[in-house]
Image (cartoon, rainbow, N blue to C red; front, side, top):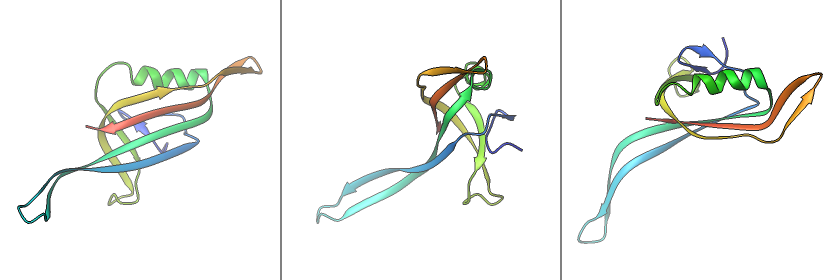
Length: 118
């Protein structure tokens, strides 16, 4: 099984997978200056990076991310009970660098895709 799937479809193995999480909180100070805070939610972010990816593989990923607003993304996570977490995510930035041809195949460099939990 591929390390990352989008809507159940395995994608090309990324050169790097960077996981992140952020806390959504509501914070305020009381009359005596003490900070009080409620934790609303913990959301996850997945940043995928390919040093070099073949155009056909890149196109498959872009096509998977073109049809909707939210996607089911599964990826390795050491905090998940079975080591794999699935989130409903939307697409953040997609960037890529200069492409080049090698043996008649076009490759894109420094491709990055951010997926952020809903």
